[in-house]
Amino acid sequence: GATVITNLFSALPYIGQTLVEWAWGGFSVDNPTLTRFFAIHFLLPFLIAGITLVHLTFLHETGSNNPLGLVSDCDKIPFHPYFSFKDVLGFILMLTPLMALALFSPNLLGDPENFTPANPLVTPPHIKPEWYFLFAYAIL
Image (tube, rainbow, N blue to C red; front, side, top):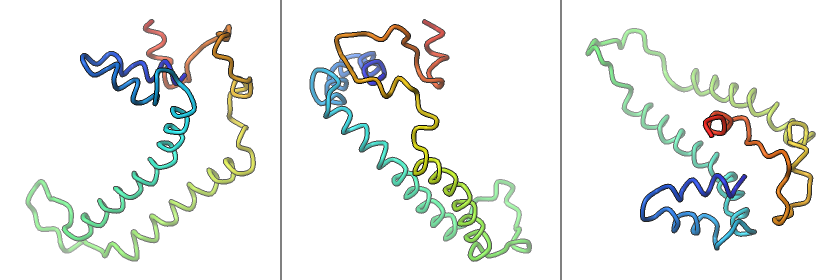
């Protein structure tokens, strides 16, 4: 999985192979690669949440643009507490099942192939990409 996906960087002219080796942390997929990918997967949601909060703050401070140029102050309601509580409630309703799934049955939706010990010398007989890469795999 990681080798195929990171090798997509090698399609970039001039810098592709350098990007692949940088992403791998060496000349093949190894512990540094997995450590980097785990760190990215851990930090990316926090980065997205932070950018979203900054966006909401700027939107609250300056307001959104009106493409028609009409004055519509008459039907405005304050952002806080109405939308803040709605957003927090939606966040809790979405996070609760996700946390329950992740904490109480983390392997429920996992692929059984993930529990096979890795052996770089043996290729599994039934290699297929994850569902979100099947469209590209079908092109091959």
